[in-house]
Image (cartoon, rainbow over all chains, first blue to last red; front, side):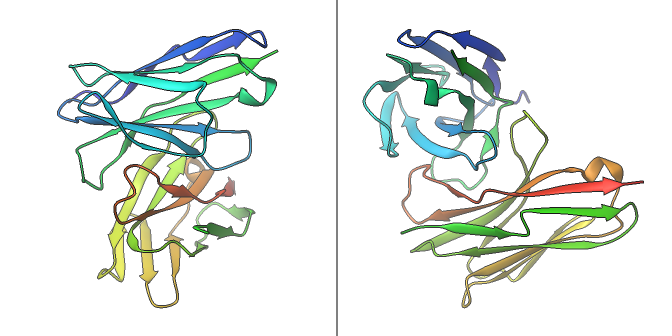
Length: 112
Length: 113
């Protein structure tokens, strides 16, 4: 059984650029959720994808968007990067309506 | 507003000692409460998951309690080890929340030799 894999592990971008983060879900899981964790803070919910559609969204602007693919892997896209977007981005996979969320190790994004 | 508050913010203990971390929440309607361990720069790893009807759940040296009436939970770590040094995050889920887990800010535990 494979866990959740995120790529890249680290990334440095310039303000105004666009970034794509990737997540491969755990085998057998069909739902992917994305979270943003600023330094010293708890993660904040960005959105969740199920069956390739956005299934729930937190308080993030539209420049945060995502995709889920038929193999349940997912992407998080952020446009027009701002300095405050610097954070650890976590992906978690689960079965729909199941309590067990498995987290990846995250992508550390630094915006300069 | 759905919130999860944890205390203490940080804790230093000696190896072999026990400790208890606290979590208070105001999430409604309540579905479940989880405790995660997070090493610096890594993703959270699940320790326990508790639903409304569960009062206590153990996972090795970790024991979580839940009082759904007072909306409080605790995580007790027994016979601490150096590898227990990490942040411990309390996470609460509301019914029908579609992934919108409410995270506490965590308790940073340091175990010293």
